Image 1 (cartoon, rainbow, N blue to C red):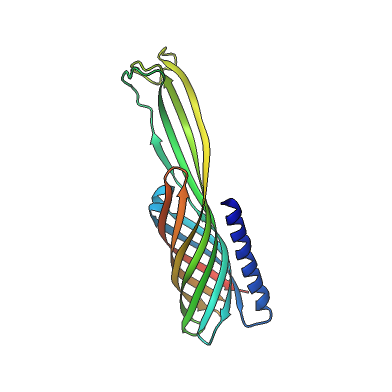
Image 2 (cartoon, rainbow, N blue to C red; image 1 turned 90 degrees about the horizontal axis):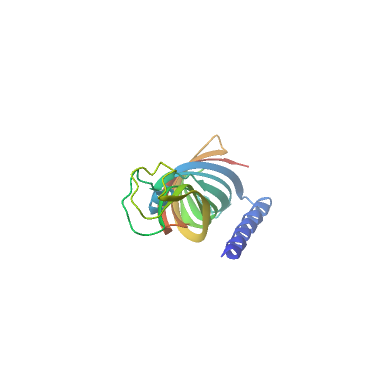
Length: 232
């Protein structure tokens, strides 16, 4: 899977680089774009947070006076949050099972992605206002970091689990682990842009995305993003 995602990223980079070179001999235009936004749906729930930040390089190839094909390659960071997965009660009943394990476990999730996007752009007002839509391919990685404490008992009842001198407590262990999951996905992008001062643009886009976490599996999401771009 990693080799396939690496080949995809290299191919996307080659296509964008080729487009940039072609722009030297044609009327195509290059731009750099920075975006911030939010994510919703099951993907947001899996990350415990919904913020996104992106950096993108794009090349536009005019088809006619009002239409263009746009190719871009970018990086996206999804902000993650913390979730308390489990906690150790102050008192525990007898289970009769030796050992019995209780945990206070906190999980923090974060995600990042390489994105390649192909768009069709149509200018409603030439060089001022445009609409766009297309397809996005992404190679995303989600990391989950677990921290906390594990309490190992002999299965007898304990009235105060905070007393480490209790003979029914066999061990107190530290939880420190990290798991990662990579996934390749395809999604849709649609939005609008407004140009000003000839070389600057503000865009508002909606997009779909797919993330796969180590603990919950594949999750889909819908995001919105406000982006600022300048041509070069």
